[in-house]
Length: 438
Image (cartoon, rainbow, N blue to C red):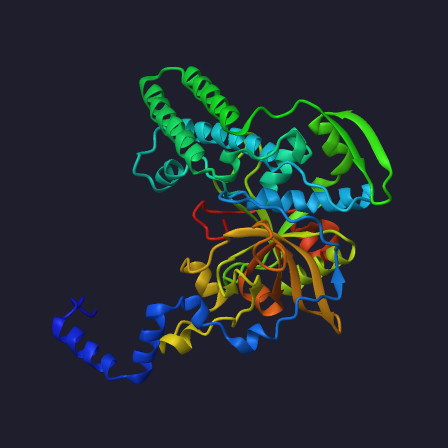
């Protein structure tokens, strides 16, 4: 085994001299000194080849903006549901309340964290999973199963009934203070268990504190609201007073039909297999997060079928790789980083996943696809970053980027081939909580 080597100052000096004598390195250094690397490495041939037009398109709705929060999963979920609402009501657009989902998600995450603190009470504070739970007790991030369960339990509301507050759009301070309440409670719960005392009073008090803080930051969710609208033909419709559950039952039925289909590139992960991830039960009494594996071809075919039926497709990806955020374009070879540095950087999708070079960092919706001889060339993406990026908030993804950086799509089970549907009937194989697919 080779002995570890410290950095030798003489080696550094020789490398410095060699780089100063290298014209290409000097030019690259001079360029990077004054210009953003992301701009320097854009391959103009790729950029100019990307046409945003697509052959199959769901009509655009008003773009949404999650601002400085990690609510992309809820924005994307509501954007899937509102497409049916727009068609059924014959309206140009409608926006659903992201804060309504967000409020109840925070409450459920708090309850799940406190339940975990009790079940983990005899594990040391240095345990890997205990450390991870305490590191982020109540983050903004989320997943489709979590979204679907929240809507099924609490319903949904139009945006006007619970609009965003400043804390919804800029969530750091709220999250920090909620995390303090929960970490404090976790230590007290652990002490109660160690002393043989009843942890319930501590749990109840902590949940009351969390609820109080959430209402201060986000407002009190509506018990009911008046639902009325004017359609594209200028006809006015007054439906009447609805509760959030009645609203969801009326306009978002069939949530149980949707499943998460994952492309997991690791060679040891079999296709057509149902997986669950430990410690991802973010609502007490509900199952862990699950997905079924399939080939890229299956993911794409199901997504195409959904788009052709007018249903946006929720998907999770590694959003920041090989993109031009301002222009709103993605391609697997959009940036020539290797050409700038003269250094090898290429990795396979599986290598990026297992080394944590890639992660599932963002959720959006597919709302269009450009098909040539039945095969997708590019995809139209509805994002939740406002109208200042992309084509007034919509983005274009070349199919090469889908191959490399898309990991999950959410579609109705009926759009999947029989061998994938069969896997949904089998007990899930459990993956550890630190698995990179979560």
